[in-house]
Image 1 (spheres, rainbow, N blue to C red):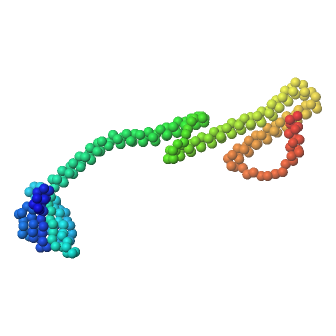
Image 2 (image 1 turned 90 degrees about the horizontal axis):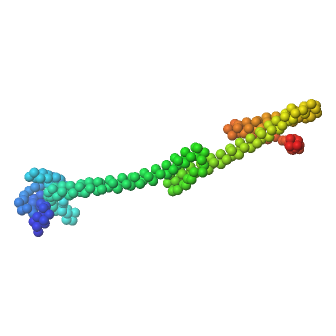
Image 3 (image 1 turned 90 degrees about the vertical axis):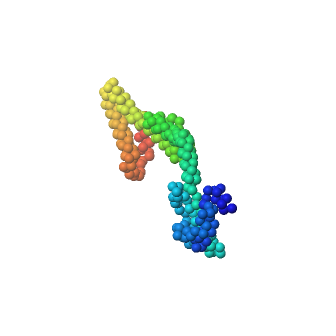
Amino acid sequence: ATVGISAALETHIRVLDTRGVVLVDSVGREVGKDISDAANVITALGGEQLSTTQRVDGEDWLYVSVPLWVEEKVTGVIYLGQPMRDVTAVLSDLRLRLLLAAVLAMPLSALVGLALARTIAQPLAVLTTAAGKLSAGDFDYPLQARGQDELGRLSRAFVIMRDQLQAVEQMRTQFVSDVSHELRTPLTAIKGLIETLQDGAADDPAVRDRFLASIEGETDRLIRLVNDLLILSRADAQAISLRRKQIDLRALVHATVQKLT
C-alpha cells in the first residue's frame, strides 16, 4: 500500500522506529538502514516536526519529518521526501496567473482611477469657476452643495460665504446710497441759498443774515455727517469706544423742523 501511494504521489515514504532505523521504505532500498544521524530524524525523535530541502542527483527535494505519538510518547517517525519540481511548477503557474491578473487589472485600475479623478476634479472645477465669478462681483452663479464628503462640506461653506458676501455687498450699496443722499441734501440747500444771494437777496440785510445763518447750519450739518462717517469707519475697525449721554429731544426736534422749513 505504501509503495502504491508513493508511486501515485511521487513521494519517498519511510517509517522509522525510535532508534532511527528504517522499518518501511516505499522504494524498498533502505529497510533496516540506520539514518538516525539525519537532522530531520533527530528533530522528529525529539518531538518536533522539521522541513528541509536537499539536492539529490541534481534535483531539489523537500523532506518533512513528523514524529509519531502514542500516549504522549514518540514511538517512531514518518519521513517523507517530495521532488521540488512539482512545487516549482505550482509556483510558476501561480506566478503566471498573478502576472496575467495584474495585466488585466491595469486597464480596470486606470478606468477606476480616471473615474475617481473626474469625480474629484469636477466639483473643484465648479468651485474654481464660482470663485472667479464671485471675485468679479457675480453672486448669481448657480452652485449646489451635494454629498457629505470633504468636497460637499467645502461646497456648502462656499455657498454660505457667497451669501454672506452678497449680503455685505447689498449693505454697502445701500450705505453708499444713503450717504450720498445725506450729503446731497445740505449741498443742494447751500447751492440754492448762494444762488439766491447772488440774484439780489444779499441787498436785504435781514434776508442776507438769515441765508448766511442757514448756510452756516448746512455747513455744520455736513461737518457732522463727515464726522459720523469717520466714527463709523473707526467703529468698523473696532477702534472706538461708545459712551452714553443725555440729549434734549425737544431741541433736536425743533432744530430738525427748522431745517425742513
